[in-house]
Image (tube, rainbow, N blue to C red; front, side, top):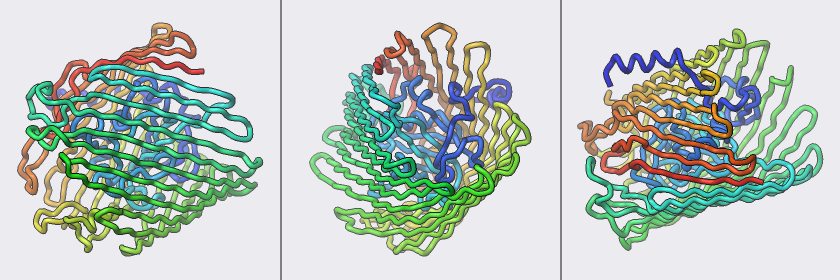
Length: 602
């Protein structure tokens, strides 16, 4: 892409627009992850994006990583097709530096090295996805250096309701789902299950070769969940939830070794919550449990990776001065365990406080948290945010925070582990100006003692020097014409390691676009895609560029038809230009693919 074209694309952001959730009134959208308290998105100082159920359902996205890729500042890479290892990068930080939650339950896999296993996270029964950018350890603790992604599932409507959906398409893909719920004033119960099966395509391929010349790598995923709640009285209630992800992935060790390799996943995420409300405060007591169970079959050689996280917490929200001023105080305890060959554990105790004030048109938020690990030194982190609304059209906000990432038990005690590792630390800053449908954000992050594999000592280590990730995001959102919605965002990222080299697999620039047309009764047409700029990979252990995996554009198309209020049909085409590209050198991506589906509700 020439400099002239790049400049014109950026300039176009100032004269065209969208809103990713254009069918939603921003005044009605609330978020809970920014302060651990439900707030209107307009009253949050944090740099935050929300993907609603409406957006997900109109685009018929299968995997959460594809949904997140709609957002500015996010990119992703995958080691092949469905079920292959997928890393979502937030402002250049990889997955292990992003805290991912399902209804507040940790989804980061403590038995691995890649953080949250996005490859198995399907879009099913999701109410909204909150993406909070910037250091969030002052609120959430470790592993939130880049930010927090909280996936919030749906609460059922009153009465008896349900949905059934089915999708069929390329690579012999079959997807089936069902939801049933019942809710009264006193209790509710909701069951959901989704099954995905596909023959897929090869995970490994030499760049430029026809992927049909290799054997296919199949993938299966069954995700099921239950949510229930009971209102004891007007002031007290209990809620429980349990999600289970059962997946089987085939993969290739190399382009020549393509048979007999598979990964079995059996993860579960559970929660029990008690809530008490009175005239001046709301208290929440929670227990969360994350269980990770992976079995790798490498042509007959079995390796098991089992781990769990238990979290106990209590917090109280006190209101004062006015309805928008509050202080939250709380404490939590977590224990992390990695069994099998590691057989090690550590624990974490923490106390935290967050204060929020809204006075006239100014919002100020301050958070501080003190964490104690039995394996590491104590950590005190914090965050401060300020937002001022000059009028209905113009606002300015800024946030500064500190964060840290702790080594996993695998980093510490595996064959390549290093018991002398210490947590890495991050300082984060951003400033945003928003005028009508245009938002411009500058961000800056500085990381010290970054944890990575050190080829010099042949084990994991804390790298010398400082890694810096900085850049800007431009998002312009607006309804144009009478029935057309346009969505554009652009990210420029300068991610430099301690030696001054660009971080591999982080694109220098990323332009995303979407156009939705609603001008025909009962029909919706949607086109979306992205341009990925320069993105490099290095020869292992060096800074010698081995591959260029960027500089390409991919587009997707979807059509929705509402046959009746309760019966909807859709079709979609991914990669409509049949673009050949690789997000990771040597790993295949999908060619042009077609899908059709139906959804029935009652």
